[in-house]
Length: 367
Image 1 (cartoon, rainbow, N blue to C red):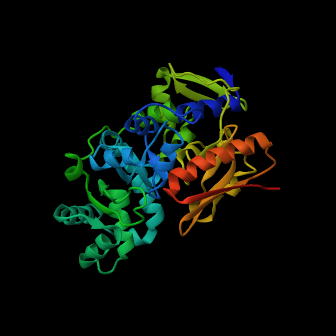
Image 2 (cartoon, one colour):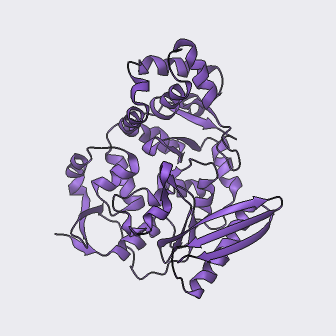
Image 3 (spheres, rainbow, N blue to C red):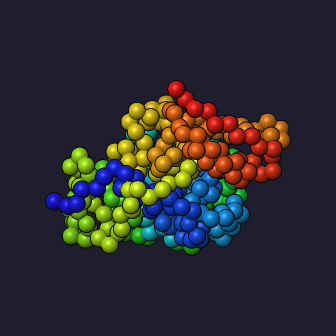
């Protein structure tokens, strides 16, 4: 029986490993590597995620890494767009292929029935070798040999699930919207992904970024299944702990647990931040009661506010001409001291995001 770990210790440890207890001094590339991958379904999300985690983060720092091919935006965890270091893309993507294929089958269903996926991938790869293609554009080009199919399905199968591709900057950078184009990973990075297709390394990286955890946690984060056997295989390398409900937890042998009483200042997280998407039991970050207020229909996960380390509200920025208004909606009664701290952090956020617009911050307390 391992030591019992309280929910607050799990919370503070996750925040520590996510660089959310205090802003970190490491470089942008080092931070992305520590996080393994950053959700980037919308281009601006990883910028806000890094701003909340790093001291003096500037948008240009991430832009430069993407232009220099040291960081890429590509389909990774759960077949969603992520920002990841080029090294990690090359070494981790092979292990994620079963999850990408499963996502494709689940999302496409009959639209992928009787489709020769390998032949489709070769066709898409040949097209991308000629020039970059946008998502819709590639789907329409693939229709020439698959006229009985749906263009969006062909694009999803190749660009999100079956072919190693990355987005070419400036697509995928701050403010770029949905105008990204794709290139073959081999041409952009100099080689195809060539890492081990066993998920052991992914499990260890998850624990370093989000642990202590379980096989279900890694499954929730990565989309991979059948991980119990992996934990059984690497168990001798791991530290075994217990949650308060008796659940067996695993951690890196030399990893430190944070102090459950460590102070945690307010932090703003972007939509779909992986902190909220990496545990089967999310109560170390958000209560079951508040979860439906953040996890919305259509697989949406709203931008959130951490107060005392836990999700306590949501936020949005609305622009009108040269003005930007940040509205923070808290879920319940919050002491004035905390509301003032949220407002101060919000002023810094809107100054970062609004780029010179006149800023207003509203903090609204729910019932």
